[in-house]
Amino acid sequence: MSDCLFCAIVAGDVPADVIHRDDDAVAFRDIDPKAPVHILVIPAAHHATAAELAAADPAATGRLLALAGSIAESEGVADSGYRIVTNTGPGAGQSVHHVHFHLLGGRDLSWPPG
Ligand code: DGP
Image (cartoon, rainbow, N blue to C red; front, top):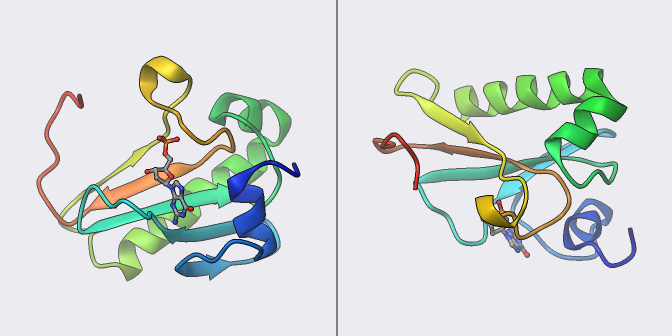
């Protein structure tokens, strides 16, 4: 989508601290990290929400979650624990309408989330 920030990051038109890129997915560090490890894992294709992505391409959804898991390993938080979060809609605080999985780790994460 031409007016989508994360499509622009996928295209390389907006700079980001990219830690993984392939034909289907990009992972980059969040610009406003909420934990020592805070990485956004996104599909290259534009889908607004996780539910829309899962309905359109369940296999890609699974690959993104597997990618998040492998990044948790490479970032050193797999053993200590991490959280994968996707906010959907205004009440949940979704501010970018290109689905993104937040991978958070490196500190104790309280429950329930705020
Ligand atoms: P959410 O509020 O769940 O839609 O999360 C959007 C996240 O995107 C938020 O944690 C901040 C991050 N973000 C917004 N703009 C940029 C940007 O230009 N670059 C990077 N790396 N992250 C961004």
